[in-house]
Length: 365
Image 1 (cartoon, rainbow, N blue to C red):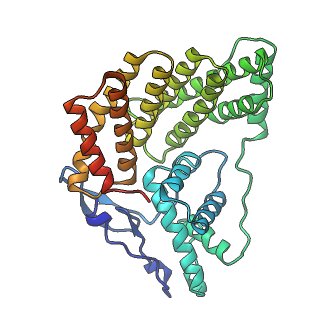
Image 2 (image 1 turned 135 degrees about the vertical axis):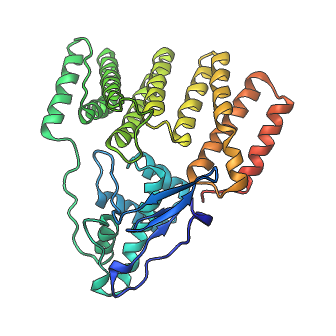
Image 3 (image 1 turned 90 degrees about the horizontal axis):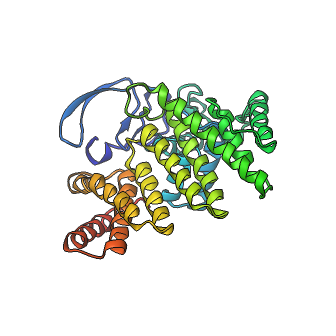
C-alpha cells in the first residue's frame, strides 16, 4: 500500500484528458511501473494499466451501479452502507468498490468542467463516462442484464420438476441456479410444494458453486474481480436468502445446512477477504447457538479469534482498509459470543479492550 493510501490526485479540469491520473486508496491505474511495499514491508514491483473497468454481478449493469452511487451521494448515505451494496449487490471486491466511487465522482467533476475534451473514454473508463453523461442529462443505454430466455426456461423447468415431486436436480450454470433461487424465494407457495422449491434452489446453488470451485483447480480461492469471484458473491447471497426461508419455517437442521453452504462458497471462492469470511463464520456460530449447540458455536467463534487477531497488528503500523475494519467488527462479535457461552476471562477481556481501542480510532464513515 502506498503511504497514506497513496497520494490522492483528484480529477481536474484538464484540456487533455489523457493526462488525467486517478490515484485512490492504494490503487493506481496508469501505464507506469513503481515499487510498492506490502504490509510486511517487503517491496514488490507492480505494473499498472490504464484499464478502469470492473466486472459486475450477473443481473446488474454499469448504468445501474452509477445511478446507485449518484443517488447514495445525493442522500448522504453512510460509506459502510454504500460499501455493503457495492460488494454484495454488485459483487465488487473492495478495491473495485473504492475505484467505482472514485470514477463516478470523477465523471461528475469532468461534466461540471463544461469542457467536452474532458469526456472520459467509454471503453477504458466506463464508470466515469456513464457518470459524465448522466450528469449532463445525456442518454445511457441500460440494456437487459437479466438472465436470457433460455436460462429462465431452464430454471423454470427445474422448479416445475420440484412441484411435481421429482428429486431435486443440480445445474452447473450459475445464471440458472440464481434464477431458480430467486423464483423459489419469491414463490407465494408456503406448503409442501414451497418447501420442495427451496430444496431445489439449495441443490442448484450447491452444484453451481461446486462447479465454480472446480474451475479454480489448485487455486486456494478466486481471483478478486474474476467471474468466479462475482459468481461466488451472488451464490452466497442467494444461499443466504434460501437459508432465511428455512429458518422462518422453522427448520434448524436445514438452516444450519444452508449456512454451511454459504460458508463453503465464501471460504473456497472468497476466502482471501476477511470481511466475507468473518460474516459467514459469525452467522454460522450464532445459528448454532440459537439452535442449542453452544459448544459448536464457541468452536466457530474460536476459529475467528485465532485467524483474525493478527489483523489488529496491521492497525498499529498502517492505515486500515475498509474490509479490515469490517473484519475486526466480526472479531469483536466472536469474542462477545465466547464470553456469552463460556464467561469472561483475563485473556478475552484484554482482547476485547484492544479491539475497542482499535475500532475507536478507525471508521468507515
